[in-house]
Image (cartoon, rainbow, N blue to C red; front, side):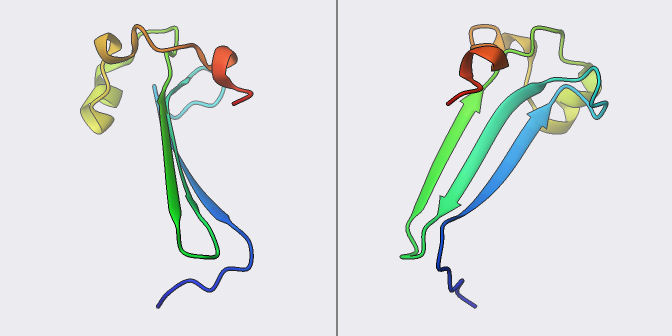
Length: 80
């Protein structure tokens, strides 16, 4: 069933270093925006969590410290 939108709809997906909101950090942000005309826009951004990514998290989503070492920190891209 096609979506019948009157305004854009965005889906946001975060990959993180873990599940604890007080200590874990974002390592990837992905946003899919669907417009009422059916067009889709995807934006993905890697983020340096400024902490080691635990093995369990890497096993879950595949991101390694090496993959995000040159990415910007969240504070540097938060306003985008």
